[in-house]
Image (cartoon, rainbow, N blue to C red):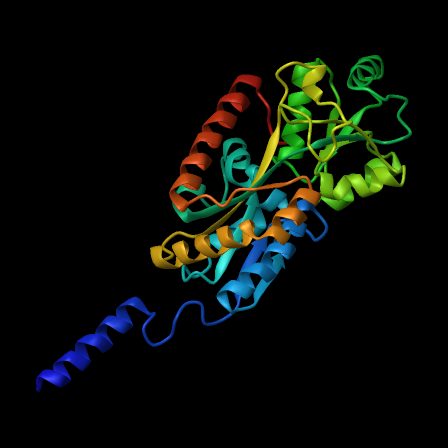
Length: 321
């Protein structure tokens, strides 16, 4: 074999091994799976982020809502997908850190079956109550809940999710005994608070504040350590119950085994999108702060958060309904 032929054969073999020489990544649409129905904060974030990634990578980004089981169905689908960088999971802190601490029979292992790509954003929650409830402060809510234990329940987007855990944390911190009612997604959960079937919920700015503006919900407090810049007039729960803080975050992961170069390409694209001025403005309007950290940083953060929630769950005895 001539030297030229040997070189050509070596180059061809290298291309087959890396899969990027003949056909660059990405060469087809990228699917982002969400474990909740359309309409929630995470769905909104995905749909404003998708076009930015498309513009950067040159391929369509398809949002695939697979609601049910608090995100487990969607996460399982991604865990079982080909590790080629074309199927991703956009999940909440609940999906990555809380549910694994609560459920012992998940059809996947977050640490083993996924590779972190980046934390997309973080945000505090808002404590919303139905206007039918005769309370306007956290102190009044606590007093009313203690006086009417059989009449109070809080809704959530699903068992094990952060809205569920926020309600359980509130019960523990305030000494109340409100019952939890799980729904399949944020929209049906908050709709029943509007209708008075549930008395309160912890949810995002994006999904609840439009209802507050039309007097169909009441925003009682926010859950961060400090007041939200977007809602400076709304107090924090911690102003009444010291130490109470709950902050949600959203992150993207790929199936374990996804090549590092593709993971890094995705992270770079997402981080660039999150720095776009229009994107920053859009997220600020949702009460969300962009992050865009590295895969290693996000992996460490998931581990730290998982340990924190595991400790809380073990000490408090919180269980999935």
